[in-house]
Length: 74
Image (tube, rainbow, N blue to C red; front, side):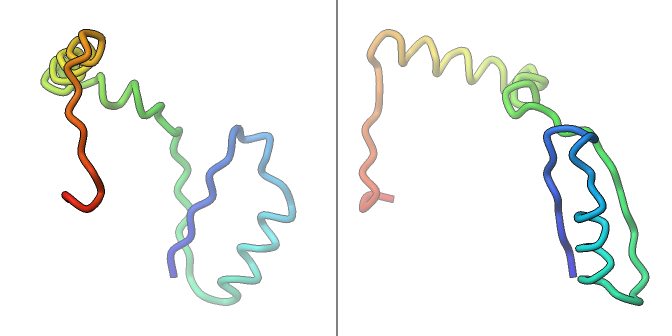
């Protein structure tokens, strides 16, 4: 089983969350990994190639150069 909890801050870790983990996994061995969430925009802009592509797309959108795609065309 795999479970992910997304919290706004470490202050949101409560005994309720810990009890839920204990209930879900009972006597099974578990691994708890804590990592800081990265903002999606920061992540996308961290790669020079992605940043260039996003900047180009934003410039095109500002000029009204949009491509309309209908769900049925996908």
